[in-house]
View 1 (cartoon, rainbow, N blue to C red):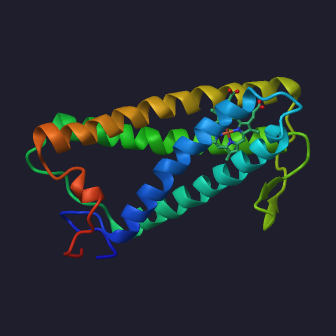
View 2: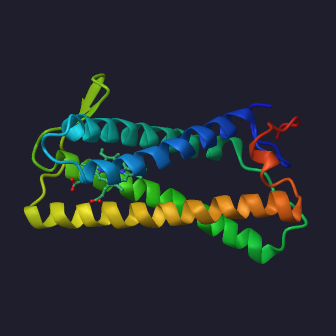
Length: 185
Ligand code: HEM
């Protein structure tokens, strides 16, 4: 029930998935919104603070998710899905992981580039490890932005594929990520 089985996801993987998905969409929306704010907006400072705190939360959840995945394994592919589609789906998931980590690391680098740390809800402060030149801050900012847009495109593709399997193919792809599997590895 908690761990993934050969046929489906367990509760822990399902919670990680549905905690991260809306958080990523919200943090992306907030990132785009806060860049358009002017200095007199009440969100000018608070917006980026929340963005950084929730962005770090995504990073910690993704690290835990990866560790859990290594420990718990992951379900086998649904037999009726062609090998090429399974491969494409796995590739999209892998690139989503890489994109999230790239965005979080560049976000951390731009936040801490000038010596101040990245604060996590006032609980602790992650100190600067690399002080960047203005050019490199600019580069990290561009990577952060474009990879974030790429991530949203991939998430849209991933979600569309899940809906396609549910409503058109009528297989268990989406249900497996909603209902914990009964058998355990
Ligand atoms: C999956 C998680 C994240 C997503 C989807 C995301 C997305 C975005 C987006 C779309 C922007 C606006 C980019 C622009 O238009 O220039 C942005 C800006 C920013 N993000 Fe993130 N972000 C994430 C995580 C983080 C993290 C973990 C941090 C810091 C630890 C961070 C720090 C920043 C900062 C400082 C900016 C403002 C950049 C600037 O003013 O040039 N982000 N983010």
